[in-house]
Length: 153
Image 1 (cartoon, rainbow, N blue to C red):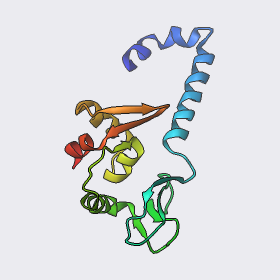
Image 2 (tube, rainbow, N blue to C red):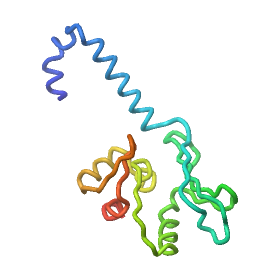
Image 3 (cartoon, rainbow, N blue to C red):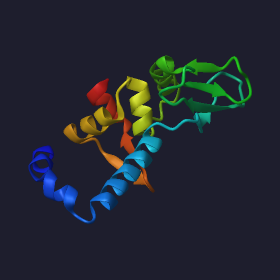
């Protein structure tokens, strides 16, 4: 595509719609950047707290890339029940052993990115190369956890 643009830049830039195309591309790029790198921490409920005799819920707090604060899981009742992102896999194994039921789990691109320290573009590439099962809920894509674990461990 770059070679085509370079070869035909003269007449492309002279076209009457060139300014409109550049404006649309810039707007699309800005929208994509805001979606990929939000400025606010995102919070969502993960499930019940895993600590014995605790009736709280675990809330995932995902910090944006430029934020100095770490992402973490924290209980909404007891602040002592908190796990930084680098311990989430360990916590997941603990919960999996406790819940021998083994239900299906799906992960978002951002979750896979944060948990394994990958860029979102690498997550999409790995999903494609390794044929991860996926499902969509509106605009959000989820990947089957077992497929992710088989690829990235």
